[in-house]
Image (cartoon, rainbow, N blue to C red):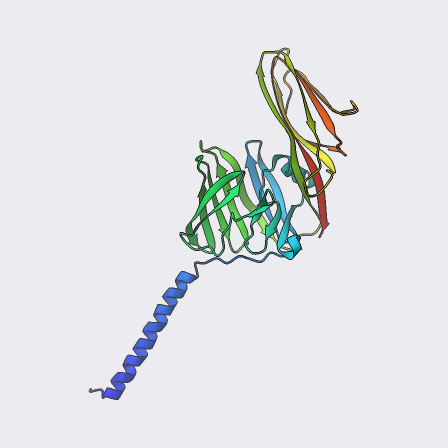
Length: 318
């Protein structure tokens, strides 16, 4: 059968059109790997398991409490447990509590938004940010199934590996290791959802005191003082939050701890005897004022670590 020129010309046009469509689909398929910044709604929540050198397998529910922070340009990510909010204020282990920008879900460190995430995510994209008082260089190492896998490194050999999943609008995992490969923070998703109801909290903290003593048989006493100043932006602290680890050996080992205010009133008095051990204890002191003096007496094999922070508590009812 012979085809006339008109038929041949028509067939060529059709083939060209089909080829063009196929080429567009390939190009679009590459573009589908881009992940745009999601929109959070008040009441969205994520349940994570947190592990740090200070404690392991602690669960916390992070909740979007507000979308009107920073003159309507940021969210407030709070927590459903007041105790966990206080733990964050003194240990500062969760960098994603507090304000998060609308445009890039940037978290704030020292009042400056940091691009831990960089939208739109594309494969091989790279950028820098500051977190945990370190500078990081980040690279997208893969995008698959709506999730971006990112690896970030610092000049001291520390590393962060994290996975952002667009379907759940947040991290599936976030793991920070030091240069020796020891976990400093392991954050793993357990569950997520929307329309959380109830009271949620954010406790803004500020470092006041940090002391650690590891002794092996030498009896001694330390005396130290610190002054409580207001938060630089938010004024007076509502309270002080403290965290301590204690361990006493056998025999005659013991620790006595006292914290007094400038009027010599004791606000903390603790005594631990042989074999005593307490890990990850959280407590609070209302209405801190002016100068405080901490005294600790050690006998035998005894270890103490104590951190104290000023705290201002905010809450929302959803």
